[in-house]
Length: 155
Ligand SMILES: [Zn+2]
Image (cartoon, rainbow, N blue to C red; front, side, top):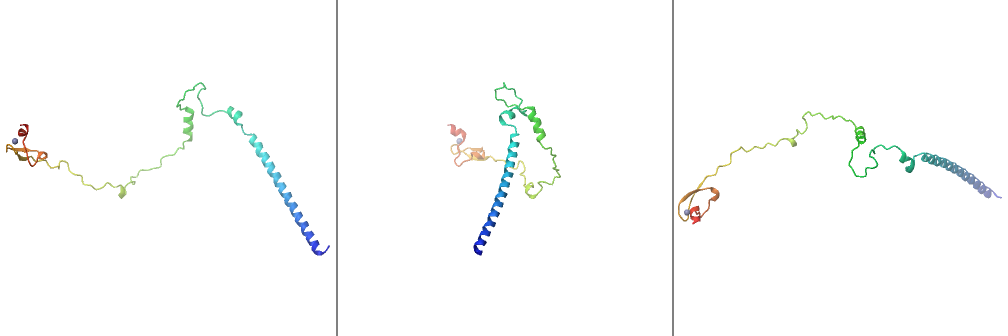
């Protein structure tokens, strides 16, 4: 064996030793994992099973008797008390100092209100009948260019 071969063999040996150490480490980790899984499984087995034990557990909300087959909107008192307990008691901290909504946006617009009764009263218009040539006082809504009085229209 020359020196080169010896070096090579030594290197190989070292590498193998390191590999075995790694494998040893890994198997330790595996064992740890296994125990962890075992513990988890045990604790899961301790939980109530859905079909049997959960069914036998006391129910909180249902109070209806089994013979009521009809759909009903019933409010059970137990639910009501539950809701009361769940609702957090918060006091209203708002203090009305009158400062809100006093900005320019919320100001009352400065609009002059028109006075009542300012509408102009209508004035009767004199119209002369085109047939009998008599003059009549007519409401302005009935004023027209060729006016014929009611008497002439009836004829
Ligand atoms: Zn007329």
